[in-house]
Image (cartoon, rainbow, N blue to C red; front, top):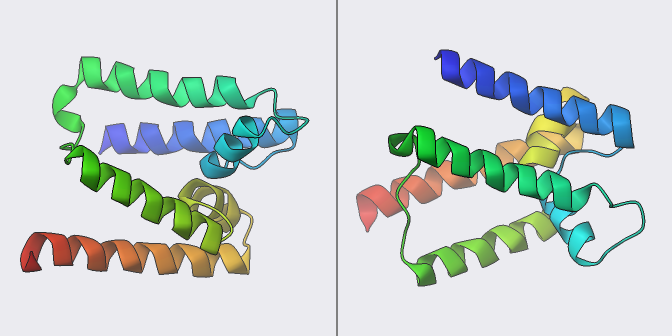
Length: 131
């Protein structure tokens, strides 16, 4: 429980710092997309994304059992494409809507978060209990 509390606080701190220092919302999909297209004002993008990868690698080294199982490469590719489609359809990702949008009381972010969480619950139930 303490780890989840600390992790949530760090995510909130990172999102707050990005808004205060760059005036940008910490929507990871948007940061990734703007970094790939090299939009002006995205000089922080590669560093932000590297920090995400580095944090994941550190967690994997220090506490490997906390990292979930990895599906096959084809399943991961299909899942990634579906997530990308959902990000485009919902005009944002879980970090942009769920962390930053809800904390700013954005109605569309609340609806988007409720939608992708419900979809996620249904998908996990189907994958675990039906397939």
